[in-house]
Image (tube, rainbow, N blue to C red; front, side, top):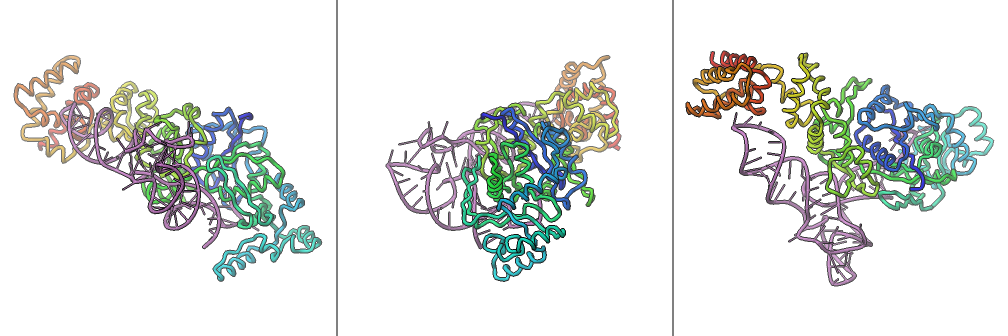
Length: 506
RNA sequence: GCCGAGUUCGUCUAGUCGGCCUAGGACGCAAGGUUUUCAUCCUUGAAAUCAGGGGUUCGAAUCCCCUACUCGGUACCA
């Protein structure tokens, strides 16, 4: 590459950032970083009716959490600002006018009602109304009205839009980095509105103008934009600008069925579709986020990177830096990828194992704080070291290791039934005494002593040890028994033994 | 309807210019091992006739054509 690329991620602040959008941003980021380029954040808020309070702040916070840093854009600044389209409003009109002056566009005065009527009419004949070369001469616009009338309407403040005027019967070629050459004939396209009656540009105009002004070299976006790519190349052509290179990414699909992954699927199947939890200001509804669900940001990034892209090797665990090095547009797949909760869980488990107890401590201390548990950090670190291999999510910690901080309030009935027999309480008291025999607890010595006693008296080992386990943990699960006792201390173990005896044998 | 894109194990995918593919890996699943328990972990296994049908070729998952299906677009939304 002879020039350093400039790419942008350009979300609309119409709600929380969808996980598919995160992946699009990630691919842009990886591409930019790999080529020592610039990653820009632009907010596309040209539709004032869909603006949602807090969405912009959400987007910025989400990328902070994920560790994807923008080099330029909203919240950062840069020499091509402003980066929010609503703040660029005055920029667009002259470009729309230039297009009209050059014969690439025209003013249209048709009311929404008139267009709706046309559509209905066509529908009745089982056709679709299209505002194009075949119909534009029968509509109310600057192509059909006398020049003076157009002037008059414009001057009097009549509502108007600017529509693109496709040349007739022309093949438009879009070169896509992922899909190759896509060709479509202009007769099939409708004269898209470029400039709305509220004085704002539509996505198409704003996007092209801004990408040009901001010197964007590569447009990496979702596949849903492929059908409007021909319009975009025509627009670059009409302005006489060099078009950026396009890459249209495959979609992220729901785990079951084939549709596009949506918020509903997440709620239904129990996984987040948003990076961060989102509280909708209008409906008051809360949607879960990866962060709040106990995912590590590195795991989310890694999982997303592999959903639609593959390095061609058998490596699956990648740090961000490794992704930057390994990434390539050519290896992005063409078909949509289904999100898999199991795979996401696996990635997160792998990343938890990669973390030290110290790394994990902030997550765990937060959980303990929420439970109002007072703790000693070095003790927590030991528990994390012992328990982290059992965690898929940091949020699993309490369920897996809560007994280190709180004596069991109840005992698993099934385990109890299987392990607790006549005389078990008596045996536990004998073991309890042996555990507390040394002035300072000696794990190895206690272990040997207890095992020897069990053998000598021909006790059922599984039964005795598991009932002790149930006393400590609350169920027949958990790590090595004597390690737990060592961590918990014999006094606490003594209390738990007495507690289970009084509860079970009363 | 029309236009566009896509189609390899249940899922994510490998598969450079056709031969090394009796199609490889990972997740998940099954069995076994480790563990006094549960989880982790280890080993092994089942799992795609490469959407279907025609070609081209000595030879095709890989090239061409047709069909089917899926998804996307078809707004003064992005």
